[in-house]
Image 1 (cartoon, rainbow, N blue to C red):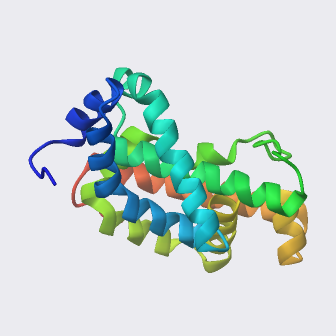
Image 2 (cartoon, rainbow, N blue to C red):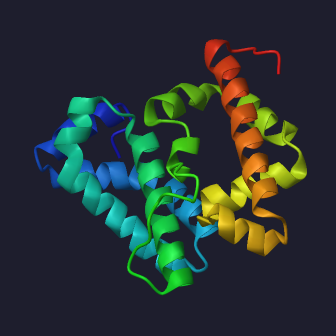
Length: 193
């Protein structure tokens, strides 16, 4: 393993179809991404399939990612999350794919930090965990179900036995709180949260 080479250099090499660079990125990042996928998906076999899809997409889209200057770990993590949620939804609904938009027209993935924000958050992970832990438990659980398991607002209302309006307002309040506090975390290393 070549420890001194950055992910950005490896991405440039992958963009030129260097299989060794892809293998290096896989060795570095696959264990963490597989851990995320195992957390989201019901079994390891499904997680491994999605992991293969994620790295295949990296191979195909490396040139675009390089032009957009994305954080490789962040982009792969978001891609893995999105693919896993798509897979869960397809399983739940016996459909090849469902719309990513919920009833209010909000994209669930818009609740997640963008790749460039995740890169900045890396050194502030403990502060970000504090932010999430400050959410009331019901909101934290709703966001977890929406983000990691791909539940729509209607599905959440059904699952939790709550009125749709209450679920909607809980999600909006939770997302607003996280976004507000995230802004503080992004501005300083020692945000007073």
